[in-house]
Amino acid sequence: MTSFSSIFKELTKNKVRLVRRLVFLQIVVGILLGFWALFYSAFEGESKAYFLISFITITPLFDVAYLFLSSRKNEQVYASQTWRLAPIKESTLLLANLFSAIVDGLYLVVIQLAMILIAGLPIIGTNEFWKTTFKNFGSIGEGKLWQDIHITDLISVIVLLILIGIFIYLAVSLINFTGKIVSDFLPEKISKLVYFLVVVSLTCIGLIFLINVYWFVMDSVTGFLQNGMFLTTLGKDAIDVRSDLTGNYLTMAVVLAVDIILIAINVVLLRKYHEAKI
Image 1 (tube, rainbow, N blue to C red):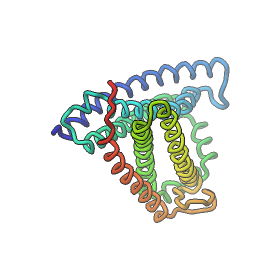
Image 2 (image 1 turned 135 degrees about the vertical axis):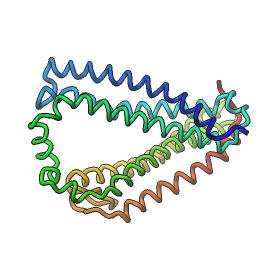
Image 3 (image 1 turned 180 degrees about the vertical axis):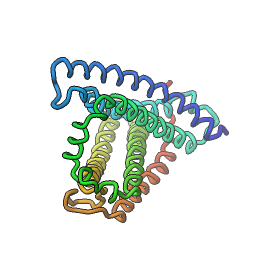
Image 4 (image 1 turned 30 degrees about the vertical axis):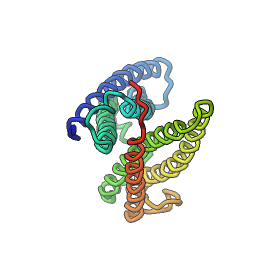
């Protein structure tokens, strides 16, 4: 059997090419948007910050693009005749494919942070930048942020975001596997309709879960900026609640448990996923 490390290395190389293309495209778009904003005074504030604002604005779009395109690449691997005929355990292929997408996604984030830092160099050294920062982020200006910050809060939210990313990849695979397997047992005339209905149903369930997690993460970030801490209690306003690490760990544990269950289900479904596409 082919080892996990060799599969992981090969799949990581494959997705790195996608990351490089996205980085190149983001640089081009960021520069063009920055010049456009500079010429037309499209953004408020100091003109030196236009390129910084441009790169910050487009970064989430490219993150979503990577998530979409890497999910598509993951499914292409499962459907590839080359990978399916290789001497690989289903669990090994699934985990290597999953974690290669996560690692390359983190690689993209690191490059994006470097781009934002470089784009912000003209403005970071100015007094206006720090005055605006102090004014907008409250506890930073009062000097409380670095006194009150819990590094474990920061790490736990990063881990939570990674777990959510894993959930999205697994959910996409679950939808694809389930829809295909169910439709294969039905007459050809209605198989496509059933596949569509299964995909829509499972997608709606996944979106409900993601929306709830999204608002939790946004509350956490808001609390971090306003109070110098991450807020971790679900269902309450970020401004009104202080840090509660127990709630944060509980949320991570729930998402981790869901991920483990989805991994187990997807391994079983992958064994039944016979149709391959090149």
